[in-house]
Image (tube, rainbow, N blue to C red):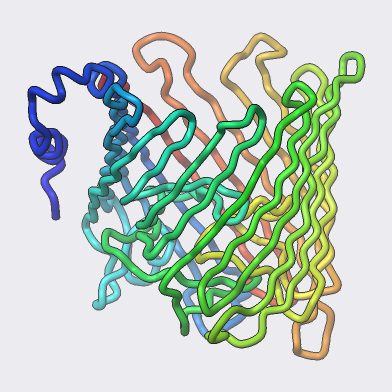
Length: 417
């Protein structure tokens, strides 16, 4: 393990002090934050389906997330450093309640008392093009930043982002490993098909390239992406996002189509999936109403990197509604209580229903989920910025395990400089 109290000074000491002083942008534009996250997670399995007979996953943990971002040295080519430090500490767990995704599970079946990691990335900027090499946390339509547990996942590799043309953002990358949300070490990248992790195979690399073009005063964005999890699957995506003011309303659409197939050595066999998603919104005052439709086509469910969420309109952190041949509908209502004079308080109520699932068991699969999220961020006083979020979920299915879930999350971010 790395002593985080010494990691940042040690990192900076590897650069000549005279160079740092001369290249003032490196220091003057640097930022550092420390996020404190307290996370309680409880998931009851009321109707267990599958080989794991554990009836409940319940743990409580404290997390610390340090993010340091330097500025760039001056000149035509600017250089800098980013660092990510994470520490997770067990507050409550038991061998019969592990596997929440908050803490690593040891060989003896116990959750680890703590786990930590420090990752560093070097970066280089020329004009409006940036190259990063090292520890990365990409947020892409083909690899969404999935910060949904105690600590965020990260990847090791290289990425490039270019915005030389107004409105057009080009991105590409080559990732060779990952540190999962409840791991301290490095691992190879694995796949997930539908709701089932494909743990019998892992890939040496995840490659991606994509373009997003924003126009119409940035109200419209179209995208085209390609991704490859080497020797497992490759994937193509076209997407559209649009927001249109109509009187007191703002109408929106978020839609896309993925086409996925097996790649190279086909380490998990055939992959055949086409996924269409759409989410329409109407916002007025504090209210935002959503209606979504999502369809899976082909012989398998939707493929993605384990254990991430995706931009699919009906995917949520509990059920994905992305099984083979599944069709699903969503209705959702968000409310921002700032419209009633209570800034910082927000709610989300969502219901998703899926059917037509090819279970391979001789019957049609069906599932549904109801989510309620309540969040509040303190607006003033000594605890200003402290956020609390409550999540309550009921999810039911005739082909996979039923779930009753509760989460309680406290977040507070300190700006160090």
